[in-house]
Every structure is written in C-alpha cells, then in structure tokens.
Length: 288
Image 1 (tube, rainbow, N blue to C red):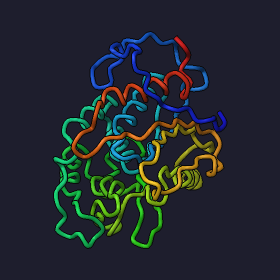
Image 2 (image 1 turned 180 degrees about the horizontal axis):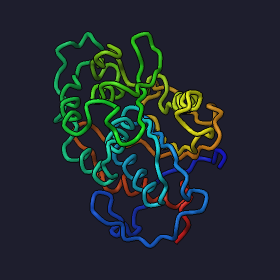
Image 3 (image 1 turned 90 degrees about the horizontal axis):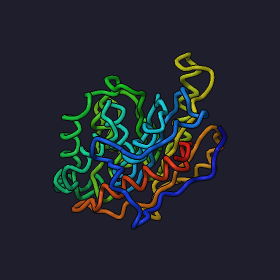
Image 4 (image 1 turned 30 degrees about the horizontal axis):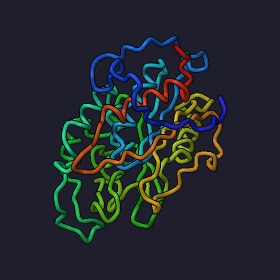
C-alpha cells in the first residue's frame, strides 16, 4: 500500500446518524468485510496534534477497529497523545471517547504557580487524572506507544519509556497556555510536540527502523494509518505527510475541532463524522 491521497472528514447534516454511536455500545450499520489489503497485517496508527480533537481521534480509532485492522503501535502528539495513550492502555475507542468527554477540560486545569515556565495554566490536574487511568510507565501499556514533545532547546523528540502520565501531559503543553512539564528522570521543561512537528511521522518511522536494526521488529516496516487534524494555529509545526517521503502510509485529514476548554461541543457528531469518512474511503472498508 503506497501513500494515498488524503481523505477529508466532513459533517453532512441531515443524513441519518442515529444508527452509528461512538460513545454507546453498538454501531448498527451494515458493513461488508474489510478489504483484503488490511486483512491480518498489523498496522501502526499515528494521531496528530489538534486542539482538543478527542472526538475526531476517537472516531477514527473506532473506524479502524470496525474495519478489523490489527494495531501494533500507536504514536500521538498533544490531543493525539491523550487519545492514543488511553487506546494503547487497552481502552476501547468508545471508552476513550467517554473518558475524554466526561467533563469540560477546564475542570482539570488551574492557574500555574510558575507562569515563568511557559504558560498561565498548569497541567497538574491532567497528570493526576492520567495517573488514575494509565499505567505509571510506558512499559505497562498493552501496545507499543510513543509521544512527541519539544525540549527546552527546541528539539522534537519521542518519548517511549519511563513515566507515562507526565510524558502524555508534556506532549499537550501548548506554549503560553500551559507551563512546561517535567518527566522525572527523562527530561525537564517539555512542551507540546506540535510546536515543531504536528504529526511526528518521520520520528516514529525512524524509531521503527531502529527497532528493526536491533532485532526487535520484523524486517518490513508495518503500514501506517495517519490521522491529521487541521491546524488551529498558524504558528504550529509541520504537518506535511508527503514531505516525510514515507511509503506504506495512508492519511485521513479532519477539520479542527472548533471547541474550547469550557465546551467540547457536539462530541458525538464530531466523532461520527470522523468514523464515517474513515470507514467509507480512507482505511479501505468496503462499501455496504
């Protein structure tokens, strides 16, 4: 499977959506079996940054599961790191959607006591919540997982070991909004990986190649499904998947969430729109 032209999520008001439920327990839409290109082979999933785009990422993951595509590894940045970490920990896409929509994000935020560290708000409440939901370290996850962050000198790096909740929060530490986050024993003063690279595809694929070199993976890089959310800021980093020069990837692009810390909007509708476009045209699910 070579690099495919990006498909785009879009909302289609007036179409019947009641039969598709992201947060509920059943998706009652008749589907044919997944196309043969996806049968049996393990794929990676890469989830981009995107301001509070939890619904879109959850819907995409639900589509991947409904298509019957086995997932071996997950990489996420910012909102993609929050969503991907829960999925890598073993939560279903519907459970991920439920957990990320149960409260407005503002309820997990508080003023930073160290605003000179990069932002006016603290992510300590987010770290505390993630400690309740996730294993303490990457090594306790059910799937291979990494997050994209930016160090104090502006370098984009992946974290794939050590303290997990702190690393996930660090990947979402938007500059000037949130104070930088420390990952004990790894890095200090980290911020949102999307500042430099909104997707992290090249870094993830390079990590896979290094795993091959040390005999931890098969000789062939796994195909990769990439979910890219439209940028919310003109100052965020690169999101050009073609510039990465990678083969065997398939890209879905969805609009920005348009939500805020106080209101996640119509979470269900956003998630279903993402699910529908992924099933219909992006991950190869056959037409009903």
